[in-house]
Image 1 (cartoon, rainbow, N blue to C red):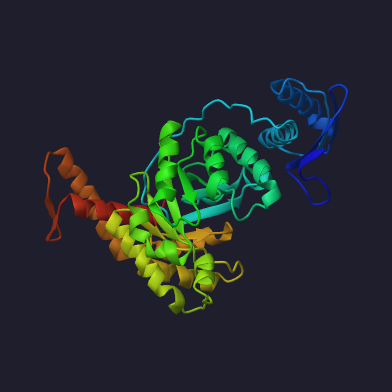
Image 2: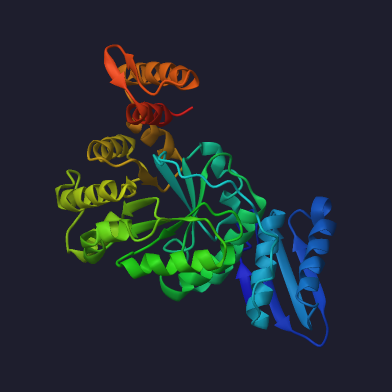
Length: 376
């Protein structure tokens, strides 16, 4: 018997699907929302089974109010694993790609927790990371891949950058193959240590016809030492991030409030990223109940040259945005520069003066980015 998904006390928005061999095809459904959606659940089960050729199996579905995308993912993952078949094809999901410098916050969401997926965009992170790596147990990796694929296909998260953190090695390549046509803006590459780590993904994405960006995460002494080579390994690299928990374990150091132990690595990553023309991103802050500490950490990251930090809970997003927001004087000046330069561009003028300062295209771009950092 093959079983994927979760059902039981405290579980909501998910489903557990079990598959076992039988003499003929049959289905048994137990749904927490039977009175309202029982018929729809059964119809979806039949539809997914049809895509697998309605095999001789007994399907048992225990539904805890799963949305259609989550039920679809659990069904196809269970059937594919039991029958040793690939996931069925999905229609290509088109999504406008953007290469934005606005990455103040990137929110990690475990790839095997469908109840979290529909509403995370409401917290307005700059980037949303559907995580297939550390937050997913080894025996749930394939089911999580199916869940992330279906979420990408069916859900929208407003203006958030749509990111997927893949696994290392061959499993990571399979993660890309399964999701590359579902509108992924950026793939996070964990434990990046070499140019080939990035070049291999570049070749794969090119072969798949994908325009997705890459965001290597430097989490080891070797990775940090090769920061510039990795940051400049492919035109697809949009940013590089430092992952301090694994890095500090690798150099046998402990994380402290003052962060002296990580200052060199953070400086190395910032300098390498700027030299390569990409965005440097700081590590996550792991203490969920320490708002003051998070604000101080984000302010320090900004002062060291980072463009943003990782978030592991929605409550961290607003705090980080405040830490990266420009002060009122900078904001007013940036607004004046952008407004006046926009007028100049419309009139065919390439440079102007604002309050006695010469303003050309680079100054304008810096001012525009300050306005972006202020948020909506």
